[in-house]
Amino acid sequence: MSERLQKVMAHDGVASRRKSEELISTGHVKVNGKVVNQLGVKVDPTDRIEVDGTPLKKERLVYFALYKPRGVISSVNDEKDRKTVLSFFKKVPERIYPVGRLDYDTSGLLILTNDGTLDFQLTHPKYEIKKTYLVKVIGKLNHEELKKIREGVLINGKYKSAPAEVEVIAKAGNSKNNSMLRLTIHEGKNHEVKEMLKAVGHPVEKLKREEFAGIGLGNLQPGEFRQLRKREVRDLYDLTK
Image 1 (cartoon, rainbow, N blue to C red):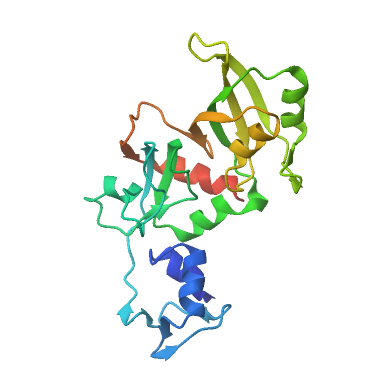
Image 2 (cartoon, helix red, strand yellow; image 1 turned 180 degrees about the vertical axis):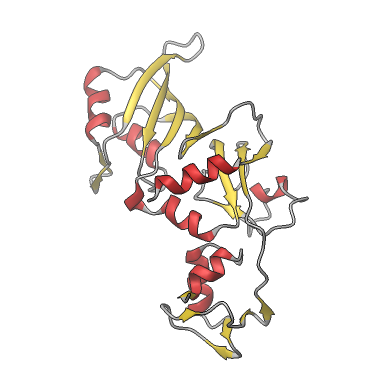
C-alpha cells in the first residue's frame, strides 16, 4: 500500500515527520535514484529510498519516558554544545528524538521515540494532548486570577490561552511569598505555562512536568529513563484516534 514519503521516513526512524518534510523539500531525499523535493509524493514498500545517499533501514520502533533534569536541552544536538537529552541514551542504538520539548530550566517527563507518526500526532494541536505541571510561583493567586487561568488568559495582548485546569496545592516551603500549583494544559505554544502565570502577575520560579499524554514520572529520578510498555504505547495511539 502506498504511503506518503515523509510518513515512511518518520516510521523508519529517519527523523520526525516535520524534519522529514524539511529533508525532502531541500533535496536530501531520492526515490529509486531520483531526487524528490515535492511533498505529497507517495511510495510503495518496494521503492528504494535514500537520504543523503544512505538507503533507508527499517529500525525497531522504541519508546522511552525520561525524567529530564533542569539545565538540559530538549534536542538531538545543540550548537552551543550544551548537554542534550540524548546524552542519557548513549547505549540506545536507535535514532530517537524528543516528542515536543521542555525548556532548558524546566524539568520533568519527556517522551523520546523514533516513531515519527506518533510524534506527529502527540504534538499536533488538534488532538489536544494534556500536559500536567507542578509549578512554583511568586505570590498567592486569588479567586479572580485562578478564574482567568481556568477560562483562558490574554497573553502579551496578542492571544488568549485555552482554558486550563489549575489547583493550589500549598504554600511553597515556609515562604508566604510563594505558592505551589498543579496546572494542566492541552496547548503546545512555547513557554505557555510561564506566560499564563506571568499574565496574571505571578512569575514562575520553578516548573516540572509531571505527566504527558497520560504517562507519568512514576519512580524515575532526574536523568533516569524507562522503556514504555506495549499497553502504554497503545494508549498513546488511542488518544489520537
